[in-house]
Length: 258
Ligand SMILES: Nc1ncnc2c1ncn2[C@@H]1O[C@H](COP(=O)(O)OP(=O)(O)O)[C@@H](O)[C@H]1O
Ligand SMILES: [Mg+2]
Image (cartoon, rainbow, N blue to C red; front, top):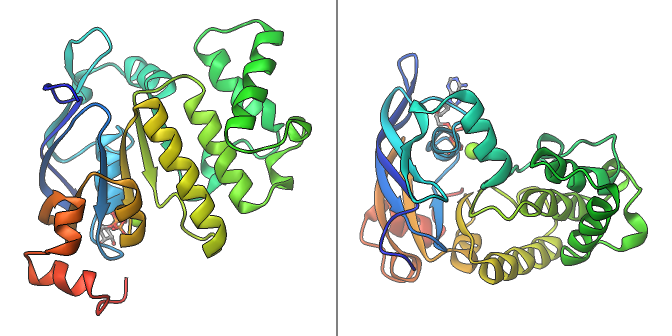
């Protein structure tokens, strides 16, 4: 891992009127590092993820990102066009609901190919070949390339969403409850796949989950949120095996229904 953070979150707060979304959140993320954000429903996980990924402007605080050219940029000082370019190329965003991350009425191949076209690839043959290659990497058979995702199962849709995001070779991927809503056996297979890809590609990732088993399997480090605040953070194994805060102890012992 590099000694320079890829992403730095500095005292980020988001208020919805008088309601707290998240408050005074700070952390660094290093290249190739997977960070889990855990906490009960309503603790501010999605708000934080959206603030970091430029989908929602924070009320206070800043987020900086180290670009491919090694310059460090404040995400909210960039132009909208620069931010969009970053999201299309260097970043991926895997939504809990595949319909938010896929175009349901175009083919699987086009869903993957579209991201390549957005970065300037214009050669139809190459695009199709790369799309098919990526379908294979997420365990979708080549003969489904012309099918629309609405004909896919939930697990396949999620795998397609992952292929669409990874095809441009991003360095950072955001995931909001990537296995939420799937059957347990489908979840396990998807988690395995995500873990393999993230490690093979050396991706940095921020994974929001209410499921501590997901955090355990995927992340190196985790932060625990409650009422918009980070109440505990540390290496995943340390936090889960030896939680310091009473609230984290409750979460880990499953006394709290999350
Ligand atoms: N668009 C919104 N308008 C007003 N309040 C919101 C909005 N989105 C989230 N909140 C509130 O912010 C808090 C954090 O929500 P959220 O980030 O969705 O938490 P989580 O993802 O952990 O379930 C909750 O109290 C929620 O009701
Ligand atoms: Mg959420």
